[in-house]
Length: 339
Length: 280
Image (cartoon, rainbow over all chains, first blue to last red):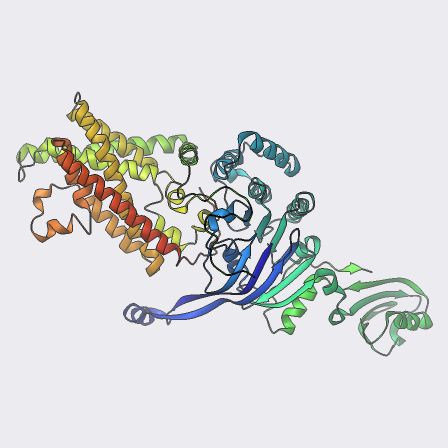
């Protein structure tokens, strides 16, 4: 469905020293520095996959999407999307793919979404009856009935994003590129948008290629994640295996005991916090099995309450970024899970 | 993986055939949407149209006062100036009404706003240019047509000639603007120079050609096509003839072809961007 091999993109960026003197020098003798936005990216995406393509700011995510949708010409490498070379067969490819750029709109700001949908139907050369049929379906699924006649400028960001995704699905694309679709949305709107993306993938079989800074998007939507930085693939893994990876064998154990925890000690366990009968421990389960810790606790006192937490995906991604020496700009929304 | 070469006309995913230009139905729908977007603010819409007509009328009043004192300037009288102004206003109005993004292309390129058009099926050239309507252009166009009908209230041959030359004039204006605005693809921040070139063309086209002689005359019929935007159209309306008309049509085809060529070359250098923005 998507095949990418050694794809890369360089830009020439003007350089200027600060101040008026720097501006004058740049005027007389401008200098440019080559910047590699995407160095060398290789991966494939199978039909029906829901893939997260993530990385810190400036990692090359958006540039890769723009090359895969034909917006940018690459400096090197090859890519095929649905059998097309995107930057050469852009027009034909556009009939089969949809794209939503969270920071850009394809809806007309001063008009209701229905007017934009009508134009998109013409743009994608949809016969009237097919268009009506698809529109009715999308309006029902995306609950757009009350929004169709409201000018886009009057819609909330979440409502607008629902309309954007519906607009991108109107021509029944086989691949949907989503560039930060939940950016700026509140928790409820994020959930609604994620649900719609999931339904498009499950019900209509649309292959989804998603970039996001929000670990919640990846956690709740994707089965596979590719992490890139400086335009290179750092990790290509299954989201579940990422969670279970030996690198992420750390567990946080919280316990309330029947007596003060002052005297508790256990080999291979780091005590993070101790307050009265309460205890918070950090356990590397690769070195110290969790049942060993439980036995030690039971030997010390009766356990009145206990929780074992896995690291959130957010923490895992931040950990990978740190391991690779990247700025840990990954995501908010901490979501620890009980085991 | 197969080679990197394009697939040309074949469509491995079985979609519609590739077409060089967007369909007429789509372009009409686009213009209808532009008009509807413009009319979303009723008073803004009406005031822009009416005040542009008034603005043009006031300009002509200045010329009328001038010609009261000096009836002829190198063979040009008040009627000639009114015809020239009617033609340029109608051509300008037609251009900015139908191709409202022609004068914004430079900033759109710099701000990465071309993305939306590149990810859609229609050919981006017309789709981009026609995705905005300058409402004041409607006022210019109506003033131009009104002024022409004032001059030639019952002359169907001249009406026909006027219609053809206004379309040609508007297309050449648009093509010239596109080329100058496309400098942004190659130079980066070119809004200033693009704006100066656009203004120069319109300003020069509002004066009689007899003011320009020698080498300047070649300049204004080539690098800056004032001759084709204003003076040749005026001479065609004054005395319609097949030769000059053919020359004007040929110049129009040439300028439009050049504009497409420069735009296509620029797109290959397009670098996109990441600004937060909305269309409309």
